Image (cartoon, rainbow, N blue to C red; front, side):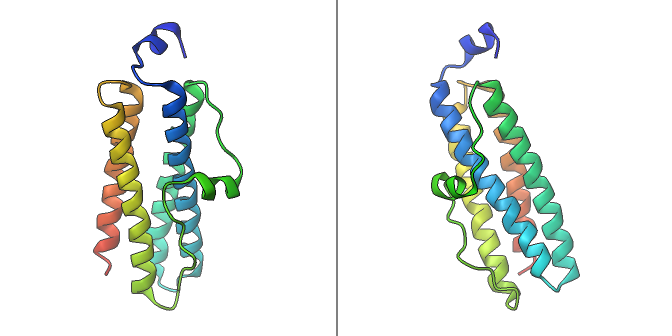
Length: 153
């Protein structure tokens, strides 16, 4: 990150990197959760929707990781560490035989991501314009995902 870019970030860079790493962990876990769900469901419509969501989550993880790197941070890589530091509780199991239960678990995870991004928006507003812009895009898509999943119940 350039000198002027560092100067205009009015928030602790290590703190925002830490918050972004937690959000990165949440996105990777969401990606895996939806990828896994797309593999176990027998409903072809759900499979297609889950695939769209996990591809979107991959894009989110890439955007977050790029911002972490730009801020001079290191991206976490250990899945156990992702579960440990993530904001969102990873479901203990996903029941492919009960679509409603499966959808409710997935919706709850998306709701947690919305809360995570909402906190980041509030924290970065007027203090880190680049991170703020990225998170605005991500929360918009998470809200769309939640709505799409809710409409399936």
